[in-house]
Length: 457
Image 1 (spheres, rainbow, N blue to C red):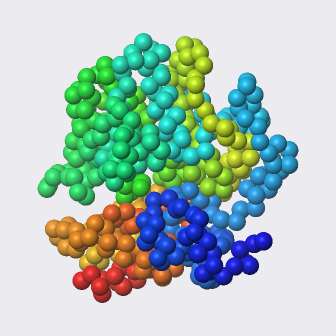
Image 2 (spheres, one colour):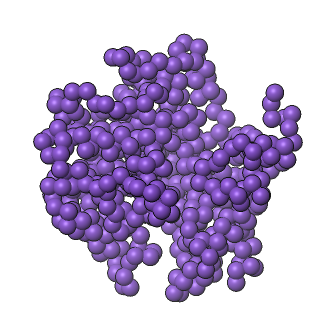
């Protein structure tokens, strides 16, 4: 039996009866009914009612090569026929995770040559936390176990991921976080910069918050600093150019490991294979997932630097950690095919040299002076629009992001899938978008803002 045997109303009723959605007000959803997405092709998704929607979020920050790529379906099919599954326990491996690990190491920044697999970014960040704390224990410094993170950070929704992240709403429902994790200010100039403060000065001040936290805790107690190169789910918060080099300098000065969460930014989104290259830094770990398979299969890969990996190998003994699907052969086969497409079609270079700069320019020209917009910003193929009541004072609308939600709903109704995060509208489109696609998206964003303005102003 297929979904074609059911009406939209029937599917929505079944959904309400049996399906608990992630990050959802279930009472609200069940009153309205879920949108049923039934198929997708290229940059578009289609719902059961026949609406074509330009996907401005690449699924959930992940479908970098777009939808309907037969190469990935074929890779999964061929691997399923040959070896649909085997684990990486019991001193076993299989060819696809081995070859994928080699490929990732070739693409990664120098010095990160080891890979630990999972099925999601949340799992990868759990692994990173375990790995970093175990590293310091093996180095004879078990007390060096505090992790410094940032407010508004998102590092997954497991207990460890939520604890590492800095989302207040998520912490409120955690009812007991992983200990020894502290949070400092984010590099969010739109709200955090002082009047007249330059971007460079603000970047250094935001980085100093990390140094202050290290000194407050005591250098011998701090294991690592974790951060997204660009804070994604928190609202595409793009740091000033001075921020990340200063963060790396601070970490090296105090012998604190640098953990990058590139679950969103990895595999091309900022115009380089990894945002570590975009910002010119070399971390000790890089968390990746999402675009590793363009979302066609669940897979994550934690990239581990040589210093940490060498200690784990030489001093570690057994590492009591792993997952049933670590290095799943089908997911790894799909990842290899996906990375091949990104390379073959030059998508990383396209984002860096063409579509990324064009998105920045087109978005600013289309809506930068709109009365509801306080700022537009972008890097590579991710962008944000700050929604304000007053452009001069940057006063927000009341209602805890309800204005952005209204704009989001108008955008979707107008054929563009966007996301509202607090008072910020965000975009993270597939890397296959062209200048023409960007123009279409900008037109639809302006229409959504105009429609919302009739209610808000």
